[in-house]
Length: 623
Figure (tube, rainbow, N blue to C red):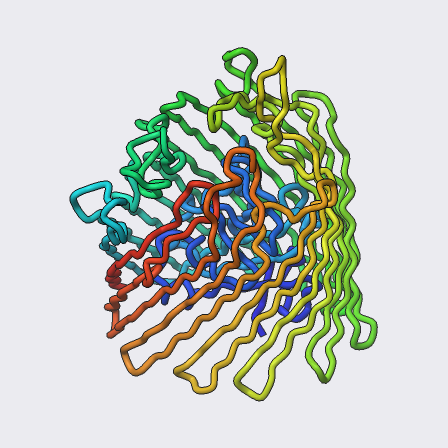
């Protein structure tokens, strides 16, 4: 039984969680040889990325550059952007990540805003005693467009990178440092990027049961922007209905310089066999500068938490988790002010929380709540309660779980105050936005069959209110775009997976999500939610060699946002095959990866082509 730490804010067995949790193990990260963590999280059951934005059971949909309904944590520290609320998956080097826990469903009862649809926790490696190191180099190439009429350059685009990690530890002091960089020519016109990253961690263990950890990371990313692909009248389409590899001329010269990083310090103390507590503080900074349009923003988020966990009687029969969390976000930006002026805005959050777990015979019951107060620019905007109740029951037919909880997401400062242009229209602010809220319900079962398989299945149902969407409004006969609370919605479906290991060298996974959504305000399906997602994965190892494959089918997205602009654009189902092969001998390993091996041409987001076939080689030396 794996041990998890995210679902209840303390260590527990996976089968003790009242909500569904998917794990991305260190083995998953290694065999896929990913450059950023999201490439592996995207294959987790119930998870789908739309142009870089994470969806857990269809919770988020897609809104370019604005808030996420999924909360990202790094070792339990919130890491969503302070201004836009999005997730920077490249901020933490993948070399530092040991595994990932994905909590599905509303997590606001413990984590507050942004956990409306779930939580993704990146858990870093323990620093071992002694000296250890790793050096990894990557090189590869993108496939050219499949048709001559779509060619946009006279060379083959490449990608590459290198990263190095070193650590040294004693019984009381330990530290690690990671440095790396990557370059990509991109697979489309105006798609180059360069990135440099560094991360470090230090630990002090002065006495048994006491640990002080300091960590930080910094990433500098410069990349060209591919706004939307070209349609007739916006560039030379060479007689085609559209040019998916070429940009609209209005976006030519667009690029972004993005610097982001965090620093965190944590004190963990186990006072007795029955009581442990933690105090932490963090600082997260993001700074982006855009060209065409010329925008910039600097956001600083300070966070703190004090938490205690009491195991009454020293066991797991009765557990109490209690704490308080606070955050302060300050943003300065030229697109958050009036009439082109620089805007300064602040947001303060404070939230106490309490959760109790009680064993009643074989039944384990969990109940708790969190109360979030959110203040923007000195005035109270919302006080939101988020209760949760759940139960777990082991049986001869697996472990049953059931839960009901309320989630919420406060509007980000960008959603409230942004003033910019998009798709040729003015985007205007809406300071009066209200929080999104949702009730989520789940019943599921997980268990092993024979000695070589495991099944997990859950039925889920979410009733959401006040969902925020970009909406066309008319001001003095001029159409403009504004973020508004416009939707009541229902999401329900099935999330199931089967993992089999018929022999030690062979493993396979089948994961399927069926999603039935309804925009109850418009009486139509929700935008950017595919009805079916099927994922097949398999890996086989023979001595020092290994091979593997992933296949994902995603049904055609039935509805998109801003259909007035993009409603007639082509949309197809996605059928994507990834292949991999590896070799390992002692400290050396090499992997060949072919993503989108069929070179399937598709898109999830309007006029934004998903990656084409990419072939890469990864060589790693470990000490």
